[in-house]
Image (cartoon, rainbow, N blue to C red; front, side, top):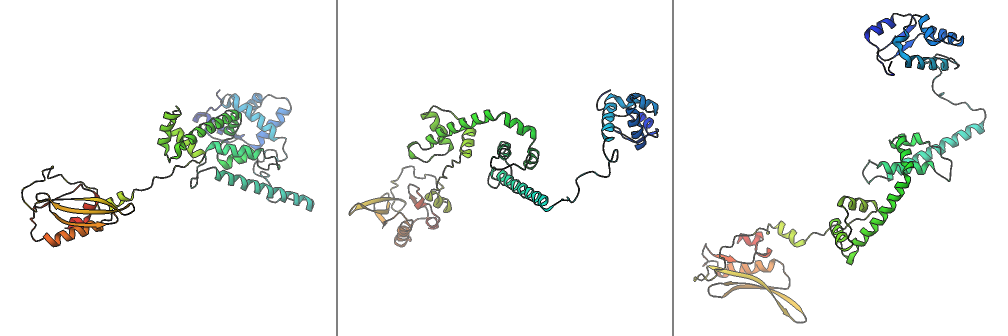
Length: 360
């Protein structure tokens, strides 16, 4: 019969009716203490297992070969114990250990202390392997720590492989497989170090700041090496290479805050000469160099038909305030004669699109 055969309902009813059977489920059978003692006695007298089952009216064909062999081995082993077939008493370690002298108790306490220290050290190393703020630790890192702790040369290791694997939540078979493949692991570490040296060389090329994608392009163009972006990021993370974050452009921040990045439709389409004064105005900012290389900025607004300068303002910086000052002068001098359909044409830089200018 098969190793893991299942009892049918008819077989269970047949076994339960026997007084030497204590309990039967669909996958297991338990015999009484009386039968166990008689079985051991008969076996010691040289009687075969099948003959014993037949003598006590137990159908050995229902049990199967595997159960007959396993029951025989288990019962004969239990018969040699002090408690024999008693499964309830005497199991497990005693709650309190008794010592014959004070030296034995001190030695026991020293071992307990050393065991606790090594366990805490293992847990500490196990945490350090993972990313900061991340509780998941790579299995390869756990196997390295377990191997290093088991090969500690400066002290006798108190932690066994099974316990460390249980703490790290990895399998023992995986740990032993890692040890068998350590040569391949060492080769991989060497190759990673060589590849990272090339990445570092591309990162420092011309002493310019680069991100991962720029490093990838530099490796391909200059060093004829094509790394996938996934491998590149893995090696950068492994060896601690962090690319600096690009600084925010302050002018773009101002434009976004003032909503001055919107472009307006070109109404004039370079048809500046309308033939009517104060209908189309042109404005722009230019710079004037003076003194010892110093520079001033001039903002003007003129009538496109008469070429007359209507207002202007000068500043030593490109702050928006001097453009606002020019607009205020224009409104003060010509505000009463302006038509509602007047058009002011500019190159649409941020100075002319801020919310304060729009209010005018």
